[in-house]
Amino acid sequence: MAITRTEAKQLLERLIFDEEHPREWVQDVWEMSPTLGETAAKLWDVYEALIECCPEEKLENLLHSIYQASLEDL
Image (cartoon, rainbow, N blue to C red; front, side, top):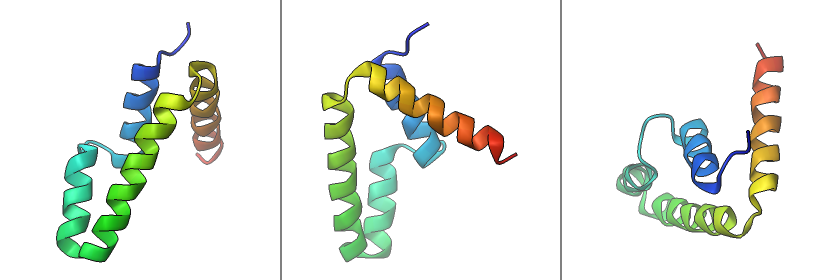
């Protein structure tokens, strides 16, 4: 079964941010260091743009690769 863009985004966010909402993560980083917070906010913006412009098939392939690599690390 194919993974939709929304599902891929949710799975990637869980991999990157665990259970924390990405905007909360950016805010947490910003509170620790405004300079790093600005970079974190830019990173989040680029992530969102990449999710939107990347074809669903490529997102699905990326997720499969990431999960496969994590299984090999066990």
